[in-house]
Image (cartoon, rainbow, N blue to C red; front, top):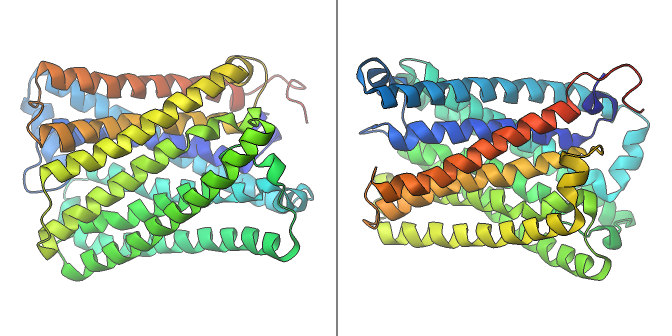
Length: 397
């Protein structure tokens, strides 16, 4: 018996999400350190020559990236399967009705959020380990669009149930909305949007790119609207009642939201450039990424200050108390790592400010890798608290 199994919450979908995010961080090594001329992303055929004939450092990097992608890709799918099984049981329980009528009812959006991340993770696994996949990729893009649309339908269905119930009979406790927990639906829709934007960046078919642009724009726009509404509602409640200590990690959910939206915009811009001759400049991309990264740093400082003030880490990470919401701490660190890679490579390097593979380049890359390693340690610590088998009777019912 484990804490996660005995006291299940839909927020445990964030454990799967975090593992998927770490899969992406290792793919960043291949994305920006392995040449892939003529393709927007690296594939198996790009990495294999470096693994078999590159320098010792290149070989170590490829092996490290492959190991990280394989381990955390597997963990992502394993935790997704655990959550789908437990969530199905939870939904049939007597406790679910009370849960669904409370503010916490929006936590069910963690399910489509994790599903969308797993689709992205499986695509990364395919690009990394399947030879010849790029030869049939144009057939995969329509399937991916359908998969993300199906997940989007689930997300809108669950969000619609939550909103309709509140608008019909009320019951939303604004005094208990003293965190950014209600931003989870926006994050889920943004994750679906970035998945829908992938064909815009990688497909050579005009129709596929066009459909990708339209659908991803709809989901990203919806996510931004929801996020702004929640931001206004939640800040007022926090100023009046103080922050909900157990939900304090959600104060940094804006960080992964900005990263996901930023990647979606980059994918859309690439598709507009290659397919529709809409040409942006390196300076435009630099400023876009710098603005997004600035927002992330601001919310990181804000969130860390509040977490320190309420003693969250000492209670729920290194201490004896447990909360499924602790997994919300993984996403901001992962997102900052990924955004740092993009800001450096698509921003500073592309604009000619930093030379690729220079001392400055590796110094900034080191920040991204340090964040990545920190989140790996955090995932390990949380896994020991929530998923490690406990002695019989040690986990309270």
